[in-house]
Image (cartoon, rainbow, N blue to C red; front, side, top):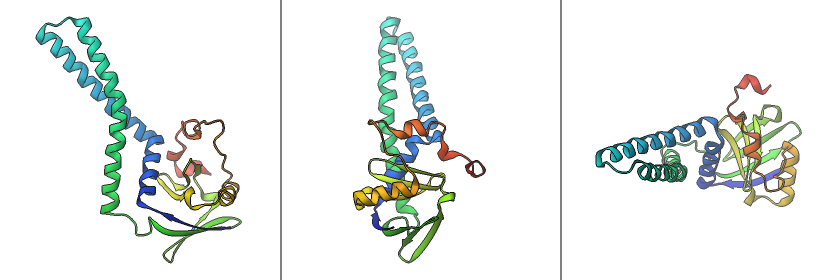
Length: 195
């Protein structure tokens, strides 16, 4: 099977945001930063209550509500901040074959991606993980590095054929397969474990 598709800068940004959303280290960093913010709010709340001699119960209720709001809003802020960092990184230095017009051929035992004359071969046995989302197929050759295939460039038949080549499962009953399958962070497993 042979497919032609185009990967844009927005597709790469979505891949990195997707990866960071489910990557164990990114989740831990996001949680610790939000927790640190809540701790700062708690210290400030304690200081304001003590300095102005306010009613402690009312002061802590307000402080806890602010912490809950901060914790929730920090997740949105983190995504916006990471998007800006990814854009800056892509503008500064990216491999010339990261995005643009591409083609991919699926053979019996490997896939071959062609970008501007450059060919890359990946044997199916060497695929770390393949994931299907609503808009993309991601084929990981190593943690954090994946072939990105936008579904907007594919027919339904081509999508079905890619699934069969990669033995992917589609989402069932509206469940997000990533929240279930990436809880042990297979994207981060060492090379020797994937054999």
